[in-house]
Length: 343
Length: 262
Image (cartoon, rainbow over all chains, first blue to last red; front, side, top):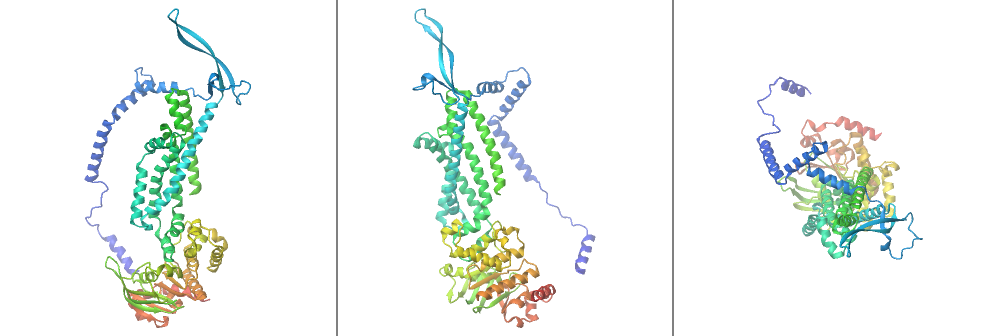
């Protein structure tokens, strides 16, 4: 005790040595910052970020009422004019419905008669003349909104199954490619290669080819999402296995439990919260990707979107875009609630 | 179950000699304490028995069978182990941690599903009661328990398969004196009830004296004393820990031991 006291007194009386406290920034950080700035300026110019800045500035000025024409503002206002009003009802020419029975309409539907103007060349006068045709149209209020809902459901199902398949294949691959479980060098390299390959193939590309193989529809979508997600989940799962606390594992190895038992009872309980978080993230991502891969014909809302876009039905496109936006918003909320509940 | 150390040497890749020419025999049913300061090679010695460490030279013979890659899968389930850091899954329940001690005797399928045979479920309940935890603790997560309670779970897990041999690697190193006495008494009682041989490493002399049938003292990988607790003279203790520090904490430990006796 006396020794400690005297040491304390000594340290108080002593003057500090001429040491230098390590500084957080030096010439190295300055050089790195300069290099990063140079790379950003160069590449930023190449991807026309400077032009984007000018154009956006013009658009903002035009919106504020500068009077100068702006390409961006014009473009956006065209898009807005075409997408709205949103197309919610389904309209079908009665001529195109086979065996149409006006006494047995679908629920909530009614028949509207509209006049359609068309111009036609009169062979006698050689003049273009207006012609007015009366056309009967079957109108189903919210019929299209309902169809979009169905397509959204299909999109969700594609995402769900893509994720399910990814879990089923990702977990064994993760076990084989986790170094601490020691399934052998061959298994390690082979599974790492498979996982890496899966991750390297973007969904949109694999969907293109899967549509060729399986035809248009959800099969290609599910498989494309599954392949890519296996790559992610396999890697994430494996990393967590490797980072798990080795002590509980040692306790089970010491009494002679096999690798699978050690994984199930010493590793899985530890990594479960992360696994759930990753899987929810991948599910969330797959819902968004499922809308995109529909563009190449792999089913779901994206396929409907592409079809309507190609037919210039921008009102329909608007409905689809709003629906996708709402879906992503709701799912985001749901996922964060779920994550909080399980962890 | 008996264990024989036959001129065992353990050299780590960095050149450290953890065990140097260690030879002794522990007969069936003995409570043998390996005593020594940190870095004396106690843990390595224990880990050579169940193959967590492999001797560089010499043999370890358990019940007439030499420890090796071939014999380990058969021997390990008969050797229970209690760890210094408890080595439990903190997120899992007490029930899950205790019953995991029966994994070697559970089929892979039922282990993967996580449903154990009924006899093991019963056994786990009995053991949790035996180590002094109430029934509602079965559903508690281990991370909610105190250190002493966690080690009780560790002891229950080690006795799940009624091991003929129990290794206790510094089981009370991170516990307070009173809890240390309680836990060691628990290990001794459970081992006696099953006739299990115990090899327990400790660094507290008082505890070693109180619980050991025999003390083997080690320093720098060598056995420096082997005999009955009564024969452990202050001179030997001085050689182990240095003259001044030898009896540090003695008064406190004495008090705890006295309480335990009453």
